[in-house]
Length: 453
Image (cartoon, rainbow, N blue to C red):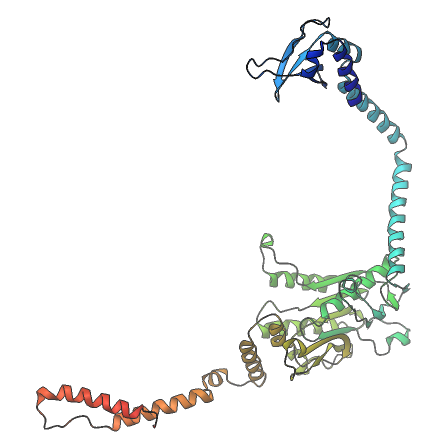
């Protein structure tokens, strides 16, 4: 269109006087209005600098003024209107006709096209999984009928992309009855993880669930070797994000998740429990976790495969769950160096799974790593030790420090010396007694508080 309008304005200028050509800016086309000649406007009169004087083009009809220019309709523009018409509207109408006809043709082949689309989508997904498996060193899992999970060097497919080095870990779970003794030996029904914050417990739970899920959709998995039993459902007791729109507390949501998992789980289910019971009183939370584990383990062969992570170490210290053979305790290993000068070097997270439970969550050290003052951290650790020994906090907190004891001793000595002094003479006149007593008190206090005392 631009080249055509340029040709139009060149043709028009051939019929105009030489002096008028400089005032003609261009020719334009507007839908439903047609072709127009654009002329510079005269600021005084508001009309164009040229209005067709001395030409055979015919009368110029002024239509409107915009942006310092006047648009005219003349005989040449009318000829173009008659020849080409309202081309934009015609083009739009023709586009609608073509699209409508094309839609009709497509609908005639709706079923094969939908089938082809589904096949292309499935092929695209399979290709993406295949390319990802090749790029990130995934391996083919083995699917079996037995309700087991046997993973060697499993990894989290997303976490390993955002950290400098990812430490792989195994996972061995077994439940139900089966003759696969090679996997059954030493494999618990429930594995409970303890350990510090930021040690990788939640990542371990999630990577196991992801590997199980990927195996069931026919994908390779991020593990060196994986034997996965058929799984009906993956149930979670993991705290969701806080939201005011839900109208309920996070603890209530945790309880609902736990209730759903208990009602819906089967021996072919995988249940993940992360920090269950942390939303209430510590004793109540530990009791709820112990009861939840006891419920699942009491199911015997009907127990689902269970992975749990917790900071409630007291659950295992009382020996309440020791009678359950299907339970195994593990922790994410850390290396401690309390003599290190920097807080960052005192606790090193190794992120590898070891059997046996951790003795501490190192919450104070995690607080120090996140900027909590060292005095507060040390005080918190001392109180934690006292609580672990069931000592009376009120008596301990009321105990004075060495500096406070020295200060209190000085104050006591000052008070005793002050009380032992005699102020003034009883035979003095009453008029002089008040002034003499004030002076005596000042002298006594100066003597008592002198550096020699």
